[in-house]
Image (tube, rainbow over all chains, first blue to last red):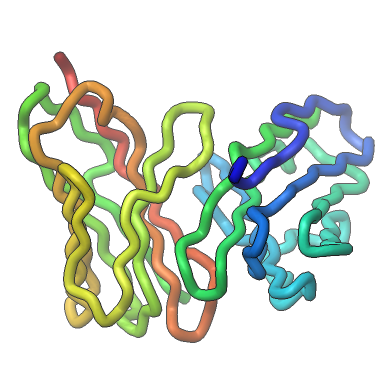
Length: 112
Length: 112
């Protein structure tokens, strides 16, 4: 298996632009997580999907952030409009229920 | 809210030394605890997962222990090598949740 796949790996955009991050989980995993990593706050959960259904989005910073999982093999995290404080590394992770979480390589987002 | 603390924040040791990384958590009602490794600019690699009913897990030169009652875990690395240089992250899943609650990590440097 190729592991969790994320794209793009790096994204540089200007404030106010829309940003879409993509994730392909490991086949057969029914849980998908989006995390954000910053120097100040470390790694924090943004949203959790189980069987493609959003279960907990309490970590989503504000309405500018949205996430979807249209099927078991694809998820997106969208920021619209983006702001400089959104600059961070965004990780997608997947797991079989209640087991080890496997992380993707991350997307490094820079908002100018 | 589960708080996870890792001590020390940074550690430098000469090659060949055995070392211990510490992790503490405030809520002892955990589902499991996971240790990760993160190389600069990379994603997270799962090293060991300890279920709440377990006391320790071993993989090669790594041994992780769990003491739920005291809210502590340790990661023991035997015969350290320069290739072990990375940031080591501890994360717990509480019984009431599913998301990983991360510590800020210990940055390890093993010098030749």
